Structure formats: C-alpha cells, structure tokens
Image (spheres, rainbow, N blue to C red):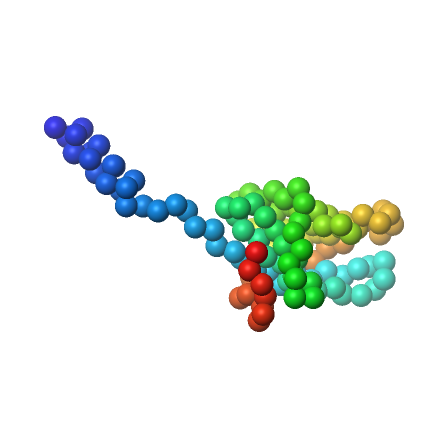
Length: 121
C-alpha cells in the first residue's frame, strides 16, 4: 500500500508542476584592451535554460554563436571576439579575432538589473 501512496503523490506533484522557466541574467562587463590602452565596458545577457548569450549594443541584442553555458562558465563567440566568463569569480577573458597580437584580454563582470530600455530576447 505504501508504494501506491508514493506513486499517487509523485503523479500529483508532476501534474501540478509547470515547465522550468528561464530567467535571463544581466552582466555589466569591463576589460582593458592592452593593445590600445582603453577600458571597454558592455552589458551582456545570458539564459541558462535556453543556452543563449547576447550583447546589448545600441539598444539591440546581438546573439552570440557557439554558446556553451555550464554551472561554472559561459563561453560564446561574437564576430570580433571570443568571450569566456567564469561564473564562480566573475573573471572575464576576451580573445580578439582580428589577429593575435596582444593575446587574451582580461576583465570582470558583475550581475546587474536589466539596463533601462533593454529589449527582451
């Protein structure tokens, strides 16, 4: 009889629970371009469940390619660079694709609320 009660409880929980909802998370990221001596800043949005990442540029979201999001890191590719964000310590690495001079650029990201006027993906 115990097995029947557990089966009924499991069926009730499954029937009442809805699908997992994705929560978009926003990051404010900055890195120093040692090749040019300037600090760059950008807003990025990512969604764990949909496995997507976007950059906010000029009021538009630009989707990254070949995105991989794990509990530890986010890796994605945008036309001018490859981006890796370490979710444990907030470290950011940016690898420019237009030549290899200068190598990997480093910075950091912090969680933020959605920027004012940011579109939804």
